[in-house]
Image (cartoon, rainbow, N blue to C red; front, side, top):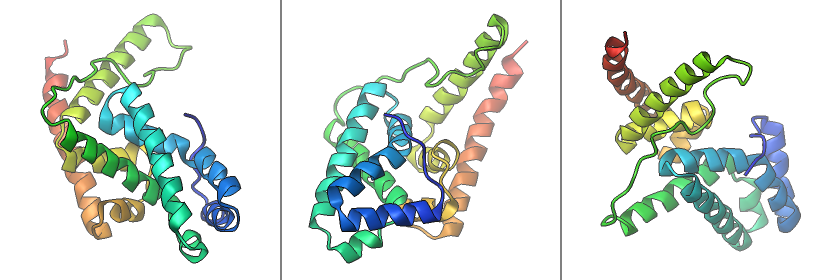
Length: 196
């Protein structure tokens, strides 16, 4: 899924208004505007591209179904990005609960290319290795530390949006991101010492 995340408050307000006026046409614009955010969040929590595709599709299906039941006033007031990310996280948690007896695997390769394609082979290999290490360490963090980091540094959400998704005060969202980064740094330090 592709699409550019929209950060402009005016654009977001227009999307909510479009959905309130014409659900079908407006929802198509919501998907275009938020597909990247929804997919990247799904990929970081699920750790598997196929699972992320399923989560993203299910998220938009659930969002559309919910919007059909909302009155126009509620649609106009939706903070779309945090609402969609909340749906992704809830679906993912439900999947974990349903599949708790199944073993899971963690991919060991990087999720995205680590380097500029113009880099030489050595730089590309080192960059991909470092990104793979960070992705593995991030995947190994507990959910309470991983999710805030993903929302802030992968999805690019503001602390206010993170607080909305996590249903906590903004200060708590900042603390959770900070604690998660500290845990990630503490795991990176031994890796740096092991390098020649």
